[in-house]
Length: 78
Image (cartoon, rainbow, N blue to C red; front, side):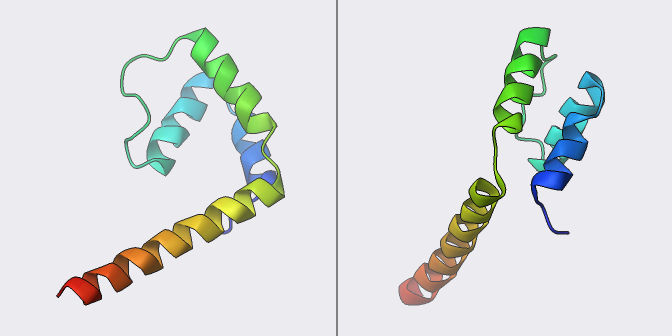
Protein backbone atom coordinates (compact mmCIF):
# COMPACT_ATOMS: atom_id res chain seq x y z
CA UNK A 1 0.00 0.00 0.00
CA UNK A 2 1.32 3.40 -0.95
CA UNK A 3 1.01 5.95 1.80
CA UNK A 4 0.74 9.53 0.61
CA UNK A 5 -0.93 12.84 1.47
CA UNK A 6 -4.20 11.69 -0.12
CA UNK A 7 -4.27 8.59 2.11
CA UNK A 8 -3.41 10.71 5.15
CA UNK A 9 -6.19 13.18 4.34
CA UNK A 10 -8.66 10.30 4.07
CA UNK A 11 -7.65 9.21 7.58
CA UNK A 12 -8.26 12.75 8.82
CA UNK A 13 -11.84 12.58 7.53
CA UNK A 14 -12.61 9.73 9.95
CA UNK A 15 -14.45 10.32 13.23
CA UNK A 16 -12.16 10.56 16.28
CA UNK A 17 -12.62 6.97 17.48
CA UNK A 18 -11.95 5.53 14.03
CA UNK A 19 -8.91 7.76 13.54
CA UNK A 20 -7.45 6.59 16.85
CA UNK A 21 -8.22 2.98 15.90
CA UNK A 22 -6.47 3.36 12.55
CA UNK A 23 -3.47 4.99 14.20
CA UNK A 24 -3.23 1.97 16.49
CA UNK A 25 -3.37 -0.38 13.49
CA UNK A 26 -0.78 1.62 11.53
CA UNK A 27 1.54 1.89 14.53
CA UNK A 28 1.10 -1.82 15.34
CA UNK A 29 -0.28 -0.97 18.76
CA UNK A 30 2.31 1.66 19.66
CA UNK A 31 -0.29 4.43 19.71
CA UNK A 32 -1.45 4.92 23.30
CA UNK A 33 -3.93 2.27 24.32
CA UNK A 34 -5.46 4.43 27.03
CA UNK A 35 -8.51 6.49 26.21
CA UNK A 36 -7.31 9.46 24.19
CA UNK A 37 -8.81 12.83 25.14
CA UNK A 38 -10.22 15.40 22.71
CA UNK A 39 -7.23 17.72 23.13
CA UNK A 40 -4.78 14.97 22.16
CA UNK A 41 -6.88 14.02 19.13
CA UNK A 42 -7.11 17.67 18.05
CA UNK A 43 -3.33 17.96 18.32
CA UNK A 44 -2.88 14.75 16.33
CA UNK A 45 -5.23 16.01 13.61
CA UNK A 46 -3.40 19.35 13.45
CA UNK A 47 0.01 17.69 13.24
CA UNK A 48 -1.10 15.21 10.58
CA UNK A 49 -2.73 17.96 8.52
CA UNK A 50 0.67 19.69 8.26
CA UNK A 51 2.47 16.61 6.85
CA UNK A 52 3.45 16.89 3.17
CA UNK A 53 4.17 14.26 0.53
CA UNK A 54 7.83 15.26 0.91
CA UNK A 55 7.69 14.50 4.65
CA UNK A 56 6.13 11.11 3.95
CA UNK A 57 8.70 10.34 1.26
CA UNK A 58 11.58 11.25 3.56
CA UNK A 59 10.15 9.14 6.39
CA UNK A 60 9.87 6.16 4.04
CA UNK A 61 13.49 6.67 2.93
CA UNK A 62 14.65 6.74 6.56
CA UNK A 63 12.70 3.59 7.37
CA UNK A 64 14.27 1.78 4.42
CA UNK A 65 17.76 2.94 5.40
CA UNK A 66 17.14 1.75 8.95
CA UNK A 67 15.97 -1.65 7.70
CA UNK A 68 19.00 -2.01 5.42
CA UNK A 69 21.37 -0.91 8.15
CA UNK A 70 19.82 -3.24 10.64
CA UNK A 71 20.09 -6.18 8.23
CA UNK A 72 23.65 -5.26 7.28
CA UNK A 73 24.56 -4.85 10.94
CA UNK A 74 23.20 -8.30 11.67
CA UNK A 75 25.38 -9.82 8.94
CA UNK A 76 28.49 -8.07 10.20
CA UNK A 77 27.91 -9.30 13.73
CA UNK A 78 27.30 -12.89 12.83
